[in-house]
Image 1: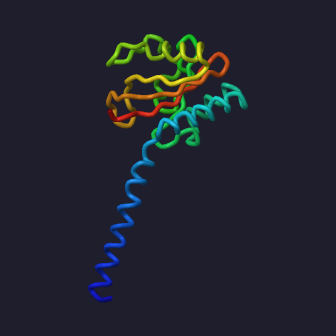
Image 2 (image 1 turned 135 degrees about the vertical axis):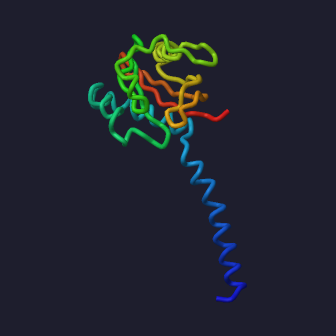
Image 3 (image 1 turned 90 degrees about the horizontal axis):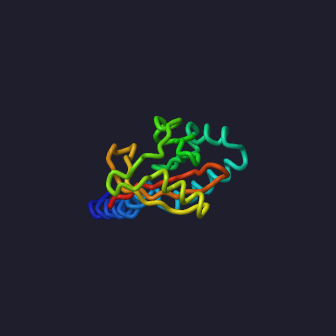
Length: 157
């Protein structure tokens, strides 16, 4: 292969990589739309199979994890009944949990959203299990009977 062809092939490969790499990086992190879609799917699943089976799946089945997204669920007393990302919270009452930046009562606010609106967004700060840092998070909450499911996306602000 002559030098001109080798150079042209190299440029073609670099251009292809430049076009593909940003998309691959972007796909590594979920979007708020992805979080809402997974929360909607989780709420429907609770309705289809019941709480016990759904919560076990959210905690253990990789099908309920999408990139950096996972499903969690709380009852209206603040008890964590499922958490695919932070399993140490399962079985604990988290009603007193506060946002370390704003002081907002995270679980109480989410309960209020679930009870009054049925579903909606909640923005707060929380420890990211991947980075172990407090980061801004936007979570979609959806009521299912006497519990709610949530799926949040961490945001770099």
